[in-house]
Length: 409
Image (cartoon, rainbow, N blue to C red):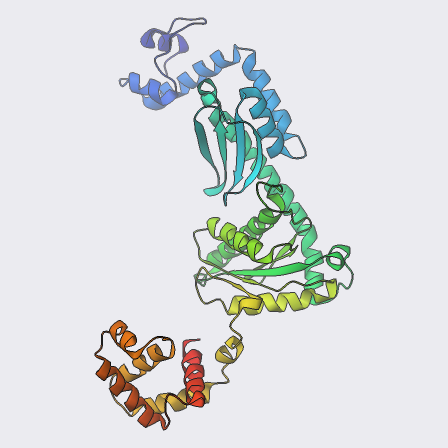
């Protein structure tokens, strides 16, 4: 392995301050010495750079100050305040779903950003708007920002474990008193991955871990968002979350249910490559209604057909339970049997389905179906013949809607 002295000689690096370096990283140094083993050059250069950096009293002081920010009760906010004060610019730490969780200062110079990764998972980002001479600080600051995000995640996990017991009691109907829930409106959200896990213990273990991460992301969305005029968001305060079987569950005091629901769904889908469906209850007051809210959220989740969809209970299709509950099996079979007589490969049935969802003229429907209007009329007339009634009959239209809807459910 080259010694530090050999490196100085080969790279023409004079000792002392003011030395003009021809490389900035160990990788760049290795490229300047192609006749030496790259790994050995990089290791030696790393030692050279570290020794030169430690020779300056500024670096140990900086590292000590950064470490002090990590000991604060709110390390992310303390770190952004410190970085803004040091650089005279602005520092932001964002969650993996994009929300600002801490910020300080006034933007100066060109913006710089770095994704914060841990274990192959995106946990956030650091953004610096600082003068150009402070830009080399970004990688060091990013490491401390990552540490701050991980500390917040650990604190959230501990908080979540305590809240799980309370939430389990509320959802089971065994907790009749809760000062927070008795004082303000709240809602329950239930989320699930759209795809089934692969068979095997390893896949089930991975799915359980992914659900726990999903619960943490939802909890972080409500707990970490910065309140204030800029965000237009009021901090949720107490947030309970847990994992039940294959579902992640949250309960939170709600102020703007639709807006919070959309934001929660966006945070969940941004945190994973998997499709996530979400069901949201209505607004409730009183701890005794938590079980009802949970039932509503699960109904809304079951009514969410899109793989990355969101359904609020009060926006659910009121006929969903009827369409999906199996009660219309006989009606569906009757309609299918009558249409099967036509023996036309389902063309008339397809035309009927289009007719039921169309609100304009027959000419417009024919154009959309790429049919001549006389062909469209003929198909509808043939359907009326085998169904035994006119399509102007509200009872027939209702039966067709229910039968086709049940088939699609």
